[in-house]
Length: 289
Image: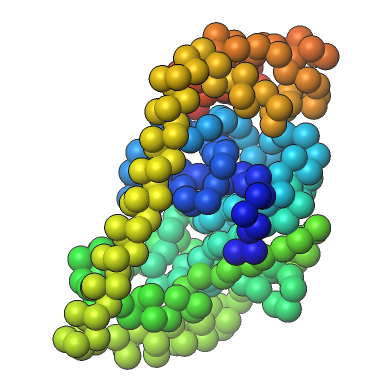
């Protein structure tokens, strides 16, 4: 990712595994893990805002960079979502499962097959659900040789898309059965090459553990920073976020503190829970988040 040292970075849909570089996290669901990997609890280890991806509570071009990791495939209206993403940020990074990954691993909660053609992000509506009941998910989690195989061919399982200024999006017709069959054949051909190799597996395990430790340390630094804010600046966390956030309903200026926020234009009031602004429409808050 082309993030400069001084860039202000937003992560949308940060979930249970936020990127260590993100400065501000944004997620729609705090208490609902239904669409998170492994259904792990959300991680809140730095300034955090609850908001809807279709109505982001940030002014135009507030952020230098935005990270959207495994979010687009969940969106019912990706065009509207990406319009919001490009409105609030100057550049960013999108990571989604490839079409082959959708066929091999399968997620019923995903709406799209994703790909990349030239400088365009390409989406095709999914009509099929999960195929193998999580079998390959368990292989990645339990077998180091399959994890090694998976990471060696990462470019085939993920689509990594970096953009600046605008996002070129192409929404295509759904795949035909013949196209799906051809996709499955290519995926199975790759899977048949997976096998344990002791020396490679040992080398991979050492490198994998090193990466996990480094990532854990970076996360711990972020967690300590958030704990520091809560301890040294009690009641002032929202005040530190106010320069970045606006009213999601009218883009008006927000005023308030850790007890609540109000829009100076439309007078909509937003609750705050343990230093986290809940910037959802009133009816959305009543439905729960």
